[in-house]
Amino acid sequence: MYDIAIIGCGVIGAAAAYALSRYDNKVVILEAENDVADCTTKANSAILHAGYDPAPGTRMARLNVRGVALAKEICAKLDVSYKQCGSLVLALDEKELPRLQHLFENGTANGVPDMKILSKEEALAMEPNLSEKVCGALWAPSAAIVNPWEYALAMTEVAVRNGVELRRSCKVTDAESIEGGYRLTVPGGTVETRCVVNAAGIWADKVHSMVEPANFHIIPTRGEYYLLDKSEGTRVSHVIFQCPNELGKGVLVAPTVHGNLIVGPNAEPVEGNDTSCTSSGLEFVKTTAQRSVPSINFGESIRSFAGVRANLDVDDFVIGEEPEAPGWIDLAGMKSPGLSAAPAVAEEAVAILKERGVLGAEKADYKDGRRHIRFKELSTEEKAALVKEQPAYGRVICRCETITEGEILAALHSEVPANTIDGVKRRAGAGMGRCQGGFCGPRVLELISRELGIDPLDILQDKNGSNVLVSETKVGGKSNG
Image (cartoon, rainbow, N blue to C red; front, side, top):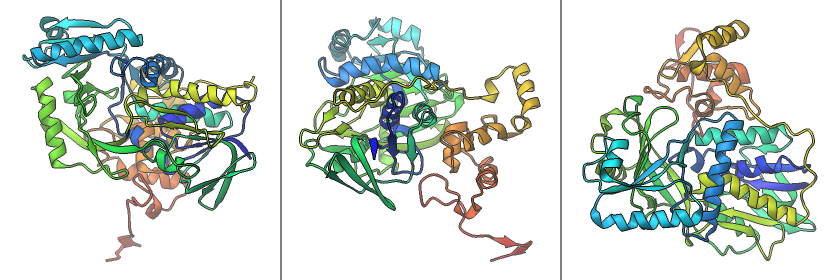
């Protein structure tokens, strides 16, 4: 029997696993998808919010500010792409200036550091491409941008290194109480565990209802985005928000840690993980964003995508033990600022388990830290030394992003190895550039087949069922068609 089973390995489940891996316990992560961070975590704004939005006194308010501070430390320790660029909330009408003051007061109550309300002139001095209609802005220097899937992946890798078991393609379909814990039904059998951490994202209410009726309801909400080429990456230097409304924080414009520009999202309730993009949704995003930054060149868009976030019917996170199911801990409703709050949410789970007397002693031989080689960021001398030691780093596979074979091989043989083309993309960056894998995709497929021994016909683009190849077209030099 396991001590703790974590259901879901998005950023919340990954943070919980990372925190729990410090203790001498038998822990397993049960992830429904074939990779970690493959739902909401991979398709969001990639913003670590400063913390002025949540109402003072809420879990969101407390855990947002704490989580952003922890994220800065974790990203440095685990070599995750991160930049503290700060954020601006714009008032685009005189009537919105009181809302900036309200956010400032919220942030002050929540402990957000160093905020300031700027005049129109000050805002335009910081961001010359803002609309001339701007009347003022709230400046929050503690906001940051991050690589969200690398953040979750890095925490998972350290957890696995320290003994946490990760099971992918392992959807929990039922749960029942047994003496001393729970029996979870998974593909091919069951998992027995003393405690459960429910970090199932948009399915958290349904997972909870396997043991007790849920007293919360998840409202899956789709947000659509544009990702623009690096030629637009310096259009703004900070995260640009408009004043929030009843739909959330609204459409933002922000640089990414990869040097692109991201624009979005809208907010539309959907059924399940519906990540389809719509012409109406993207048009809304475009039109709304141009109110903040009119000069964005959407002709430089290299990809549109959508993610589904776990909105709730209450305006706060759901964190705690189910009273009628001892040892069942929910980490649910992790809408924005869920990414920002993740490590602080994990601390809450650890505290609950510690109070229950479940946690073992802290490991004396705990192995923290991580190094991720980004070849293009090395100096000329460092590149030469690395290529001499490992020649695969001298072969460029992805020309758009200058990603080498060595980096791809590292992704295929890491503690949480990639086994799909998009899994390589998320770990190494191959396919992230302007051509979106059009050039390097076939070569990545060859490397996956060679290194992992997978038949090319069985290699997936991303999720289960997304086979890239369906049949051989030539056999022995002769057409098969």
